[in-house]
Amino acid sequence: FFQVLFMASHTDPLRALLHPTTRHETAQAVFAANCTALAYTSVDVVGELPHDPLPPPLTPPGCAFLFLGEETTRPAHKAAAGAGWTYLVHRRTASSASLSRRAFSRIPKLLPHLLFPRLASGRHPTTVFLDSKLRPTAPLRALERFLAGGANFAAFRHPKLCEGRCLSVAWRLWRAAWTGCSVAGVGREEGRGCPSPAFDWMEREASAVLRSGRLDDPARLVAQVARYRADPAVPPSSYPTYIDGGLLVQRGAREVMDAWAKEYFLSGGGADRDQPSFARAVAASAATGRLAASELNIRTSFEADGSTFRHWNRGWSTAILAR
Image 1: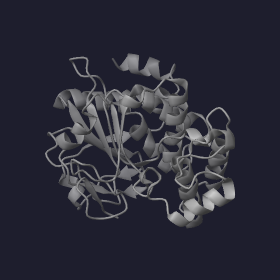
Image 2 (image 1 turned 90 degrees about the horizontal axis):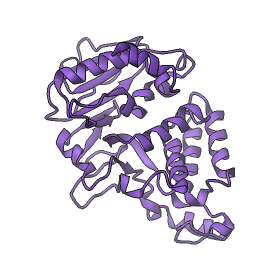
Image 3 (image 1 turned 120 degrees about the vertical axis):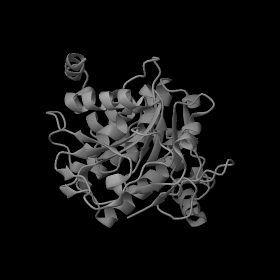
Image 4 (image 1 turned 90 degrees about the vertical axis):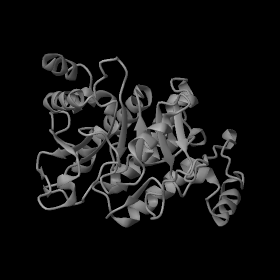
């Protein structure tokens, strides 16, 4: 089994990002706990884990995994030390050696379909990724139900996007006057190259992040967004959605996760923010017919079933932010 993992890592550039020992230890832990659904997060810092991450309530024993970089130590006196996590070491490989700590910590996030093995039944487990700064309030089974209806990937739209309805009136009026695009921001006037609301928001958020200074490599994000805007094969008008990356649910979503990971790690994405790479991957996959809309459940910030997710605000039903 270990030899198979090692050989596969040398033929697939995405698998090469995952250390064979980490994959082997993860597979052993999943099989030992018989996890049909699991939660996980990933952190890579020097020294002790800076937060007190918690798995979702009612997660089955042994089915919550916390991946720590090789220089990250377990919390000694914090709540996370006894929170029910199975700690696994996330090791670097030759392919991941040059990645920043933030990008390296995203390898488990974007490769759950390669990291977590199929079950004995042949089915994929349901995996729930949670940003390590989040305190989940919804039970694991409630999050698993986001895949009802045939979807194999679920996430929440960025709450400040709301498919264009939350873009300010002033912004949409300026857009109409300056570009000739619609005030409604539908973004389908392809003959005039009008960006979709999702692409609009991606550019605005990138500008805000650049102004904040919270980036390891600002030039890389600038080049990434400029490349997306200039690409006629996947024009700005074709971007259907922009997600909050703090909560992801998937079950065997190889098409979307492979496309996202390849764009982020292999295609010159790789900036501190992974949401632009997701937006690009979905737009490109949809344009070529490789990804059916029915496979994705991109939820709004306020759902009819009561589930909400507002990563940067308190008082919602799915998780709260602890910084």
